[in-house]
Amino acid sequence: MAAFPNLNSEAGLKKLDEHLLTRSYITGYQASKDDITVFAALAKPPTSQYVNASRWYNHIDALLRISGVSAEGSGVIVEGSAPVTEEAVATPPAADSKDAADEEDDDDVDLFGEETEEEKKAAEERAASVKASTKKKESGKSSVLIDIKPWDDETDMKKLEEAVRSVQMEGLFWGASKLVPVGYGIKKLQIMCTIVDDLVSVDTMIEEQLTVEPINEFVQSCDIVAFNKIYS
Image (cartoon, rainbow, N blue to C red; front, side, top):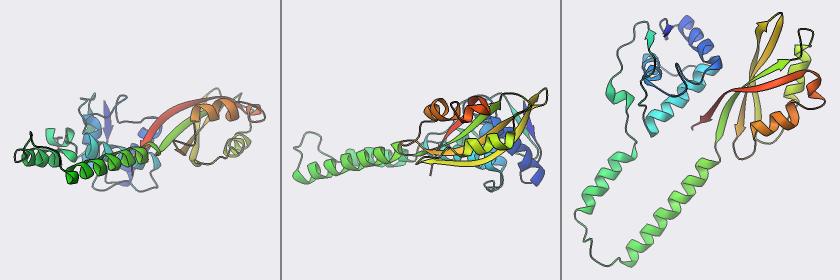
């Protein structure tokens, strides 16, 4: 069970940010009540200083606005937080209210009458709008956390990071990084990047650039630790 101090303090935000460094969610592999408990305990969104917490907060905020969260989770304790309500966990899509209004309007429509030219035109415009909206959503962005391991403890980690960041392409933006001890004096590089989904494949980048010459002089292997869509 995860536990956090007051999340509106610097210590609490720091612990949350460290907790989310290698995790997409507070517990488990999908959004759950545990994420909502922590989300609700925050008085305001984490600043960009807390990269991982900010990324997670934006993701949960988008889920609540779009589809809600239903998974139970394994439990979390937040100092001073109130219990999560069912309404907060299962927030309905914003479109529901519109759908209800549409259903009420449908009661007044002659279902057996012929479709007028105006109705046909309106239907075509709605279909075009939905198609354009879908296309726009497909070309979104994602936040990716990658573990990059060196060959041994003698690998120059500064040169390793320089080699990794030398990989440049349209739609790829390198972010914050840190060295994490693995054992036996070896440290791995954990680095964040933001990608434009339609332009960059992380798997292809790893296979064709990060693990081939000349970068493989420093890099033994790469693993995707977290991959999250960015909702604007």
